[in-house]
Length: 238
Length: 238
Image (cartoon, rainbow over all chains, first blue to last red; front, top):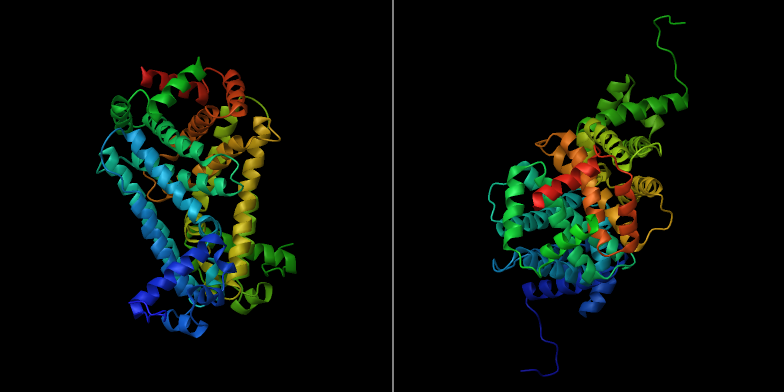
């Protein structure tokens, strides 16, 4: 029952609250501009109490990053139902939602590397931990894509197509964040088209990719993003 | 005249020699595995003398990186002659030459960030300096591309197409380095095709990109990489 008195939080609950507060601050501004004082103030606790739960900004940043990574990886989950183009488009929407919510933090992380390690304590371990986290999200995206493509053991070329498209989605999001001069809805569709386009180029050199593209194209409805792409490319070429 | 006695080098000459030796070592293995002792030994001088020219591995790494960046940016220079597809292909060859020569160092830099800042001294400045250098190379690539496309003030969409293709070239090279399971010659051609494919997708949404694609296609010979792409995509689609 609420008595107007602030309830004491348990250790884990307080840690989770701090991570949430920190993630929000680290998302909205470049993480190296966020101070522990600000985090303490936003969480409504004292600076020493923050240090009681996290030895430094560093470890709080890592915990926030871990939560963001889990959040992002979760957004790649998409039911294996309906045409692939529409599935990909839904995933791209959720990806841009994430990028939109975490803009400055996402940019700082992907562009600049973790400047939060500026205190120099264990900077190298921090860089490794951060990169391992980024790689784990990329790997989750890669595995989701393979499962939607119905492939378990891809050819090197198909692996390259999927992985390089994932990196294209990252860089497209980063370029978008820098000024937001193209509507994000268009970029979500564009990235679905880009996947088909990169797969088509890959198909020129690799039978497995060609077979896959053939199956994909066969299952697409006439009003889906893939069919739209083919139609418009044909009219462009003529 | 050679007398068999080692000639004394001037300060700048010695610095340049050390940078060259360091770059070679940093290129062949992950930079954080290379010690100052090794650099000293490869340069044929004492460890303290290395420190006389460079305050630490850190600053030597940065100097080596700067030379590598200038080298790479130089390889983007391509005469404005002949069809665009063939020009791009020559640039991709030189890019993969560079990646091939500097494999482990290139991977460590682009994947892991500068682990050489592990000593924690000025780690943040080091990260900034390294990223500024990487960005300057990307910018050089971008400006070269625009000049070959004959564009000075691109639409946001065209800028996105060019910048995201540059990042695709980076990630393709990184994925290639991890096992080299696709012949690099095929990837060089693939990246030229990828550019055309991404530009075609961009053209669906943007008039400037469409007009550019039209001009590009009109200037391509029947045996160039762009014509090959269109022909093969057509047969794939039918």
